[in-house]
Amino acid sequence: MRAFLLGAAMLAPVSAAMAQDAPASDTSVSLATGLDYSSGHYGSVRATNILVALTDVTVKTGDFQFTAALPYITITGPAFLVVGAGGVPVVVNPVRTADKERKGLGDLYLSTTYSVPSGLTGDFQVDLTGRVKLATGDEGQGLTSGETDFGFAVDVSRQIGAWAPFVSFGYRVPGAPTAYSLVSAPSFSVGTSYQISDNLLAIASYDFDGTISSTLADSQQLFGSISWVATEHLTFTTYAEYGLSSGAPKGGGGLLASWKIL
Image 1 (tube, rainbow, N blue to C red):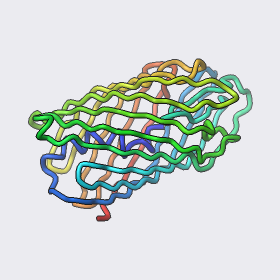
Image 2 (image 1 turned 180 degrees about the horizontal axis):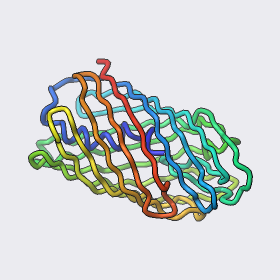
Image 3 (image 1 turned 120 degrees about the vertical axis):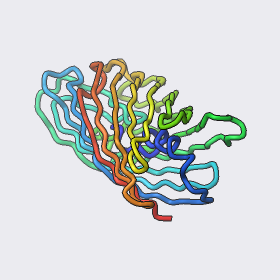
């Protein structure tokens, strides 16, 4: 479910790596769209596949960045998954026998990121992000928990030549559905970006997402991406992920296109 969080999560280290070369601008507006696919067993013999079509809008002004993301989700497979806080799946029934396709608009994600001025952080870039998920999806189809969720994250990176190592710490606070119990959980990422050329940027990371449900183990996975700055206003990103635990998709990947409108 990483696709509709890319604007606030995966692209944060991209911005960090390119920040020193980016021209100064008071306000910018970007539109992103893309597809994300993942597949995992989640306690069942057969795999459950999740396809997410992403649309998000990001407005950056000064040290602040505001993002709104709305996904269209298609879930196919035997497990009855519910999309929980931060896109983390919740397995309500892992052994449902008949495969079923469920699709529709997911929850609306809103986030605000504050980039701490470099005068206070020296050689480090520090971003503070707050997120809220509004339950706009179809609860009966398992596209939402039906509750409002909250989260926050701290991203720290440092440019060292062509490299920009980063660490991210997050915490999710899900709502309280009546049909099942959810708990708050941390998340953690560590990795680096590498500036391959003026127009190519690569990212590799290890990602840990603490489970928010007793029905699923913690998620651990490896992530890699390449971003190509085609023009001043158009960027393409392709990425892949590999699960290291039963709580993560076995594998997945996606493609994202971002246009700078203003």
